[in-house]
Image 1 (tube, one colour):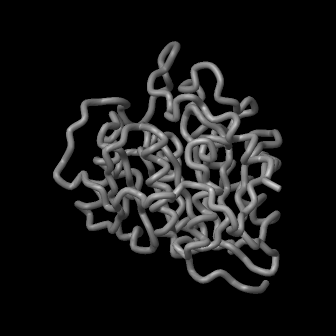
Image 2 (cartoon, rainbow, N blue to C red; image 1 turned 90 degrees about the vertical axis):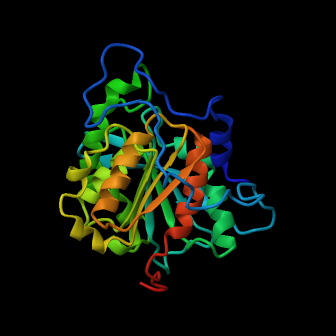
Length: 306
């Protein structure tokens, strides 16, 4: 029997698979970086990976499947119960501990956005079956940390709640996940990544808490991304990272943000992935970036027993 949650989410797929690009009313809250600007491509703004192979995102009959479920947790930061979607891999068992990826949505999304845009369960089921991704738990929370966390009205006015989510993530969400699921609760087995506003969050929170994360990915990161010298004021600290990923589409008016971070990291000799395709600020970009990002997550070996 097909799991119910992925079916329900598929019925809710937006007609246009992209994030909003302009505030609809008033002035949006000030962000660390400017928003949309002219696109000026550099010589190294090129793909680090090819286009995904045929059938990469298709449901395959007859393979083992993971489980996608909606879960609630208590948030002392927000003062309410909050929702997250959680993917557990095929054969998940409490007799084994698993690495965890925290996957963050954009300004117009919520805990359902990644499943809408990228069919997270299908990609992981296929990659795990092929031995191209390690079995892992993927947590898709709502990064808008306020009591009414639905993406309604002028979503840009909710930007401050994306900053508040840093505390919700560290103090409420991660402890809730680690108490409910069988996880490897250390930084070597904890990743964070996101798209657009979530990409900025992933870079801000990941690089700001290197004691929590060693795998960090920013996909088409938005103007909430801290200025480069503030993201990693001591570049030598990046040596402890297992992966620092930056990607963006060459037709994305926000590419200047990722370009600036890439240039700063390159100038300071910080190892990282820089992956630029011919996409825009849209789901096609994030889905293929996620596909390749998952294959770079070579976590330390999972513990077979508690």
